[in-house]
Image (cartoon, rainbow, N blue to C red):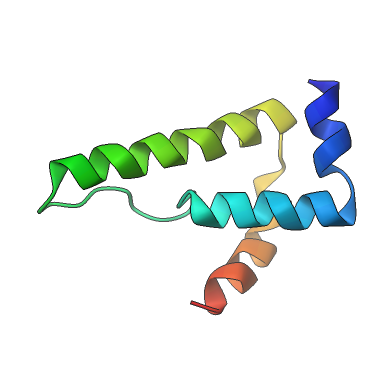
Length: 74
């Protein structure tokens, strides 16, 4: 969808996308062996990130270094 690409193609939009991917646990394991409800919640959040990545046809290699930087602050 072009509107998504318009929003997330700016430098600010890319920062927001990275924040969303981070908040949704895009690059983290969503499974919690002690809490099935938490796993379901995590997967629900992760599905939002997957939809954005799919819709935007994101080159994950392009974002990998940036995501690593975003997670480095944790």
